[in-house]
Image (cartoon, rainbow, N blue to C red; front, side, top):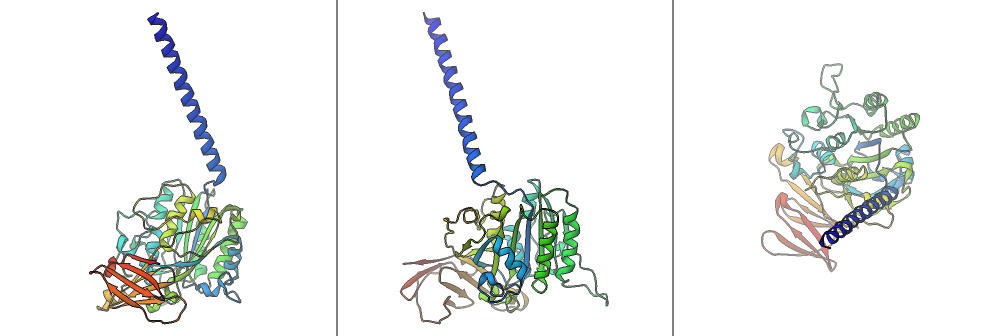
Length: 391
């Protein structure tokens, strides 16, 4: 009978739909369970200690015979050490803007320390974390990172009022211990663990700050589950404005919850703008598009993972903006750094100066040969954007 056939067809369709829905639900649950079990999101707290002027060579984690910062070296024992981390500008405000936005200076538009402020449409790391339910607080030591720069965006608390000295002159930089006191007062007021704290302190006295910070986290039973990032804000040579390792190379140590990955070392070059996508990835927050940085979570999760080598950009424009001097740009890659400050120079990392040859293919492409190895450079001026070693 046609009616019975239609009934059987409807029953078969209903059975199929129910089976597919059930299978999909079970599959999704299984995948979600496996993913959560494999790599659970970091729930906080997230603590970033940026130490301005800290040299990698001062830490035993980076090969020093004695440590200038034992508390930071002790954290390295609990964390993952990135052996080659780099900044994007010797100027303080552009460097920290890149750190907190995940953007290069020519993207976020802050190119020097005076006359620039963060654009209103640029999203910051604390802004994105706050939208995910994190309380956000910061304490700064330098006047150059004051609230008017726009770096306070996204922080519910921004302790950067430095006051005046005994002669009623504005304080340019306060000791790290005073900055810690400001941060600690905010931290003690947090009722849970889902918060982000960012601190900027000078290298002088930074180890005492680190020790006090870690002790406070332990006192509040937060250290074990905390994600703690110690990163150099700039290298000790930043005042020179030169684009060399003394300026650009910094320490980067990431301690994860339960000290996951402790003792792991990552040799591939990484950069300031990798911090924002990494933190967002660790808490499973969406990573904005068009960020040039990449998440380092794969190498934090798995010792067998690697970070692909990319050209790392840096610029020094203080001379250009302040007295019409020559701007300088650099691209760091595997084995060498290209410096452009009028002429191009290829500087190998082994410290030996050697001759290299170059050929130009139009205005935007140059090919350099060094010891039989080829480096392809694309771009001109501050659009210098690719530096790729090729066999």
